[in-house]
Length: 500
Image 1: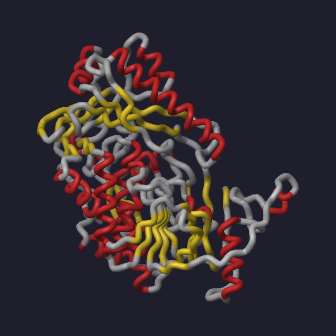
Image 2 (image 1 turned 90 degrees about the horizontal axis):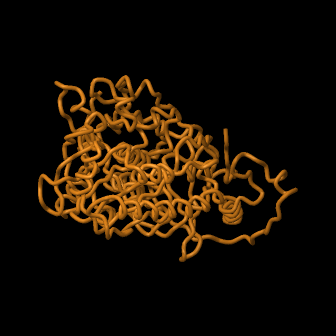
Image 3 (image 1 turned 90 degrees about the vertical axis):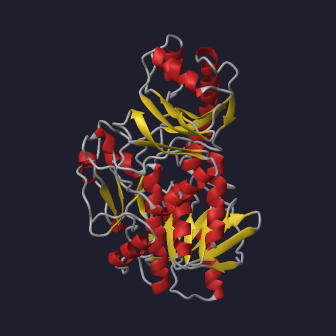
């Protein structure tokens, strides 16, 4: 088990001089315990240090601070602001969206897996703010809609494909409309902790180094950065490959589908809105294709054959995977991986040009700015969702959303095409009174995590966490003092679908 602490140990409030000293310790970790649980004393024997001078940091105050403007963070910040909380959203990149925009795949999944279970009712089980985003994308011509799967529906009943660049813009606009103070191009570098509460975070940008103080905090960083800075317990299982996905332009998805059909490899198919026209192919592909020369090369670069699009001449993503020897929190290993994956993506485009009709003049049109992860740190929360909870379709009296998709289907499916619940206590970071975690940082069991880490589940968790954080801030409550019934009522009023 790994822990890390950057904490302000004096009682709150503190005087200015003590506060400045605490800020220094929180932001740089000099003299504090190092990430990974090691002590500074042992590290001093093998590592040189530069002692930074103390510095007064300007302060901004908020009700809610959301770290990470990714899949969960965008929805969390909008939800908190709509509850009336003054909300800040911190993001290292220059845009919001996270894995939704960088993975490039379809969003999984707003519906239960009804098509795999004849006679089961079709239900949209994730609604609220996530569906508002989809509605706006459809109006802008940037989404396929919830297109029903014609093949491969044992995996998902629908394909919700998006234009990733439009998603960034619409998410940004919705944050602005909600009144969120959006800090893009801003690094979160530390946490200020007083006992069992987080009092603030240290951020750094080209505007300088600052302290953001808040009443409630939500960690949506994917890597669990805020939780780790705040001293939460965590593990790093390194049980997934990392990846990057390349968008390929100057292609023909209809010819690609015909190519797959000719080689008996068409495993998934959905038709929906594409370039403004209905009933067009928006998802096609197979887990594997046995084409001499292409198959071996694709295997060598970890390339998948399934793709999605909302435009006639564009494949939204072709994914290349790479297994790291250590956790993706390792800067040095990730630096090597960034180069290797980009080599693999270039090779993937070459394979399309060489083997796939209609792709002879294909080119690399989009990549993520950095590799994508499926899991970094697993943050220890009050409840750890189990595989049985997911597969047996269990519900909880404090659940903040329900979900029905599993990324390992058909090997793993939620029982009888139903749903399971994400309990509020599964978002409460253990040992800290005012910090919630959501997205791919929760759920230690791999089979359970293969459901809870998916994009639409992360979006729903974000609405639950952001709503709860705002309610806690309004009542000056710790996370565990908030009654789940109050959260659930606020979520229902905001259009969230709940069963139990």
